[in-house]
Length: 219
Ligand SMILES: [Zn+2]
Image (cartoon, rainbow, N blue to C red; front, side, top):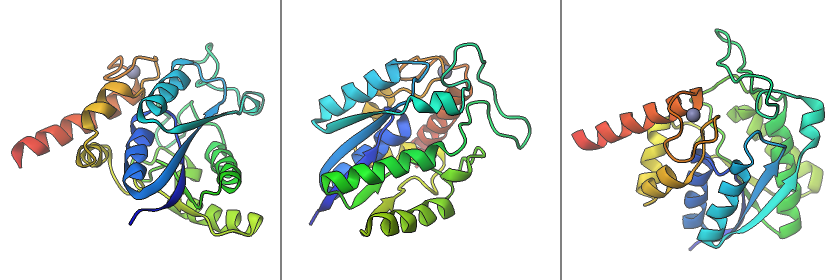
């Protein structure tokens, strides 16, 4: 029997789209929420819209443009280049506390639409230095959300311990490999599907896909 209702934190990228398919299998009803924080590529929002429309999922877009005031950075301003972090440092796309804010707003939305579950594609395996993507943080926030609204939310993190290859494997198990491959946007240069091939996000995505496909061929 499927569980109740869930809100999916949804960016239109590989990870959150895989989570969307994961949630479709588990919950009676799902709704997606996308945060509009003035992404450098408006295509990201369009991509999220197109995917939810095609899958017939109710889609909320919340205005989070105030993030620009708090932390202007490479994701939202055109005059700063996206770079890999220094050795052990944070990448230049880092917005402190962004996931804290997004998950908190998702919690408020969940409360309003009567959803007990909040699904997010955060992941500790490819840990890129975002402290609010760690499992311990998500568990801590889960307690805080429950206390703040006197409710019993469950934050689900299906990708928490998966690497990129395993995330592709999960998409494949959900019958969504081709969909995720062709319809999602991960590329920092705004190129849909397999992307520009040059930016750090494309390289990470491709490495994972190649790894999974060669594993699949062997087995
Ligand atoms: Zn790219």
